[in-house]
Length: 344
Ligand code: SAH
Image (cartoon, rainbow, N blue to C red):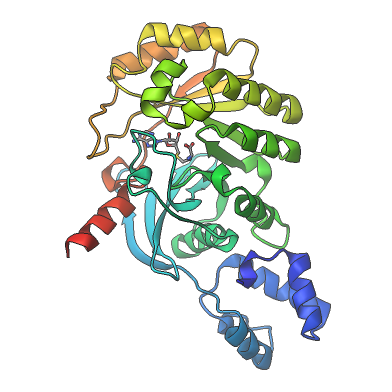
């Protein structure tokens, strides 16, 4: 067990059982949530207690194995090594509304999307709550930049690691912790319908991002295996239920792939299908992945697609690509690193 995965109430219980005063748990919780490399950083905690904690509950902070900073836009990408040797990525993006971290939720992924580098080696394991928390805390600490927003859009499928992700959200949202507002958090999913309903039932004020990437099952099945389990109509119904439960507009991600999903008729089909569902589209020109034959749409096609959606009543933005010079999209850095290691 890692103490950093415990809520403040649970930590208080542990401290009570150790015969420690209640205020101590509050102090320690704050330190743990902030990201520390060793218990000796807890300067207001007695040394004797720090020694006991050190022995019983190793902190296991992540180690930076690669850090790349974009010269163009200040985006910083971290490749962390976890305590068991596995690696995950975190990206820090500097938007006008605040510094945003994109965190990983699993080591690898088992969803198999055809365009995504994260899934190439399959799923290795799910991340523990503290391993997600540490990505935020240590990115903030290393960069010295205050983090105000989080997107769960790195390596992995967050809803495939549901319980750990829910616990992470509780931690990162806690007042004595990093205190990041739910409204500043986006969770992205490839479309696991029963889990979307489970999330809706929690009525959190976070933004649900759905990786749609196609207007129909015929196209979606060629790039996203998950659509065989959950057809697009079922997925959109789940989005409607999510909206009914939370009043939060759904954000759809749409990676634009040349000749696959970027034709005018695709935009028109989306408009028909999404009727009545408050939504916003994020159009992302595909990031080319070495191992894949898929290519990004042209700028002109992306612009035309955006205009069609907007004219059809669907707000759509073309996502500015940040960190293009540092392999900042999903899973690319980890992929490169593990390949290099294998070749050595
Ligand atoms: N598993 C979750 C979150 C991680 S991926 C999901 O599927 O939503 C974050 C987003 O990046 C998803 O929309 C995903 O489809 C997209 N993505 C993955 N590889 C990409 C690539 N090469 N180019 C553009 N977008 C990509």
